[in-house]
Image (tube, rainbow, N blue to C red; front, top):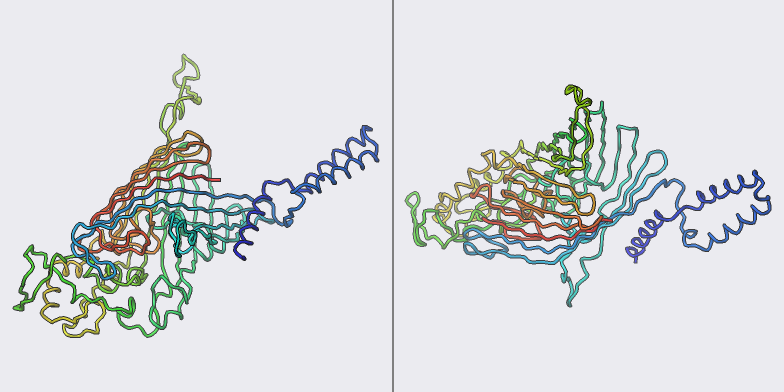
Length: 575
């Protein structure tokens, strides 16, 4: 009932944005009547009678039933509704595992879904340069999407509605202190200049942000943003920093500091770039001294998993260091060899979402320009004087163009990789208490497994630039502003295994997985003002085939894909 009342309250406030306010019209009518009285057109009594009748008529309308606080200067109701058909599949490598189930080579998990997402909200201005915003979105249980699958239900029966209930995903207050400086607090739209390589579009950071933006002349704009975000409350769940019985003692914070500029070459051409540093605090719990204790309560039992030495030999026996052991079938998947933190496809999700050893520098940038005869044409000011040139507008076609890119590097990627390797290297051949690789089997089996090329590949991971960095580069043509507009986008993206925060990246590109690289192409069309459609395709493979492709996701859940495909057809209405 409280949720229903809240929603109806939002709708009522939204309706008020389109209703004329009583005091404004009363003042205008009184001024007009006074002017007519002064000119002798009306008598005082006639003017009073007209004003009384006008007030009586107005009191019978719906507008008179809605009252807003005098501090509210303007309100805008806005939102969007997206209908989507989606197909995505992840083809696994040898021996990939999900919830203890092994897959054979080239098996895949396939999803084909009809989905929707609804978001609606209010934003407005208050007295003395203050502003506010409130927005709700469907499926609040999954922060990186908001999508609801048609037919999905947590109860028995068809046409489920369990996940259709919206939740508040933005609620904030802000203050424009002056023309250059803005303060914002709450759960806010992302204040940073960034891309979906780092931030999912549906994520809204919570905390405080300070923004400074100054235009020095017609050409140069410089901006700076600082954010102090409450990443996870002390008793929260889903993100793992310090775990065990001590996790409730710590609140994790994320800090972002950004500087950037925009340089306008002319009214049609500009270059924009920024640099952002992301760091964290509160990522370690009390009395946790081992790598295993820092990332998971549950050992990842590899000794019972079959494996392959990568030599191409048939299942049977292999010898390592004079020890002969029996191998299994096909299981040379990296998902078995990634230790107790990010990466093991059959490990607890807590392993995937760890945020230790992250100090990420991001460098987004873009170059925007226009092409076509409609941009401008030049003519001599005087036919006899070719030196004097005047510029005139043209009625020819114009295509807005944008070349964009992003680069990110984790300065602590080596330490992040060392944490995983350290747990594996701590293996004692007959000690089953070690987290990461247990030895319920024999010492000979563990020795053979550790000496295998796949296992050694994992031990040596994280040292190369591609494991430590992420980058995106692409081109866009067109824009969606009015009926009939088209837009096309093509980009390549690579996200290293240890490069970025795995809990922030976009689920609609490469399944919210790290250690993935591939191509994305999208074409959009505006059918009418506010109504557009988009076709999108993505294809990706692992950056490092020695490592798994971990994700914390409600989509394709296998954590070791050697091939990924995505197709989406969207119909979007913005209001």
